[in-house]
Structures are given as C-alpha cells and as structure tokens.
Length: 136
Image (tube, rainbow, N blue to C red; front, side):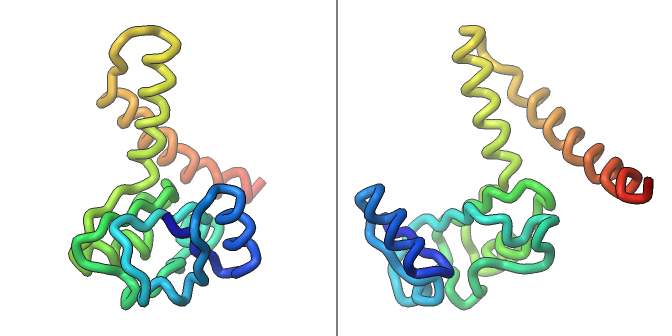
C-alpha cells in the first residue's frame, strides 16, 4: 500500500505510522496501482469541480473509490469511468458503514435499499436546505 499526498511530508508521516510506502501525488501516474482511494474533500461541494488526480494518471481497469458523497458524481469519478475504471462513490461507503453498524447493534439484516434511499434523500434535502440557510 502506498500513501500519496499533495504534501510529501504528510504522506511520509502517515505512511510511517501505518507501515506503508509514501509517494507524491504527482508521481501517481508512474506507479502501478490496482485501487485508488480519494479521502480528501477535493471534488466535494467544499472544493467543487476539481479532482485530486489528473485523468492521465488514472489506469484503465483499476478501481477508483471517491469518499466524497456530495456531489455523488465527482470529477474524479467521471474521469475514471471515462478511462475504463471501476468506480465506487461516497454514498456506497456511507451505506456500507450504516449496514455494518445496524447489523452489529441489532443482529438483524439491514434494509440496504431503504438505507441507500434514505442517504440519497438526506443528501438531496441538505442541498436544498443549504441555500435557504445561507440566505437567512
């Protein structure tokens, strides 16, 4: 596993703490990888329209997981899909976490579809509420 970051010192610190290799994000295109995980807000509503990785750095056939859930289709995921990557969005992560927690607490199989619908509805509602709150 390799930790890549915009700031090399932070990548080295996280890598050392977790027993991983470290790399600069701009070197990603020269390194082999099977799975790429974006765990930054780049591409979210806080940093819209941007991608942490240039499309040229994406590898066809790799898995690209963007933990951003709003918007669901980030620039990174759109570029990855166009490049022939398998993509996983942040809503899938939220639902998987909720399913695990529900089942651990209740011992009952989680209603996955209902949870996914509730997550997408809550995200849509927050999108509508945010402009109204900003106006007041």
